[in-house]
Image (cartoon, rainbow, N blue to C red; front, side, top):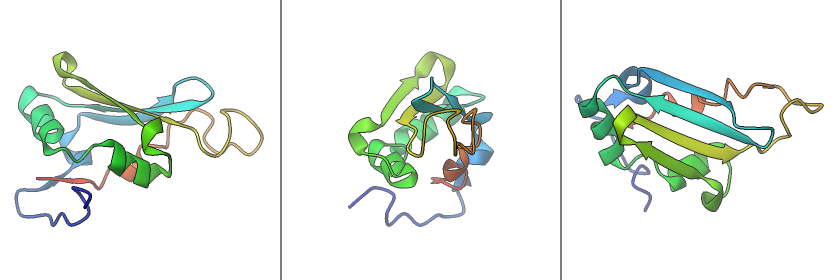
Length: 115
């Protein structure tokens, strides 16, 4: 079972959106999108990182990409987590692209509840 599939929030849980100082997405070239999650302090960063909820399986499901295509990098010194995924609809700037800069792709993460 996926670690988040049966997760029930409790009074100590908070949304990732409320914990992160920065939660954004942007293009990483024409083929990829990067999700940046940056925290104000070490304790908050470690709380999210050690929860294990931001993982390849979760990102794969939320963004409809293959688990093997998800790259997650934890930057301990910067209190940050960087996630890179392929763009699945079209190349950046190509006809039909509704988010040329990749700036609206972080929204599936905002309601993730962190214990």
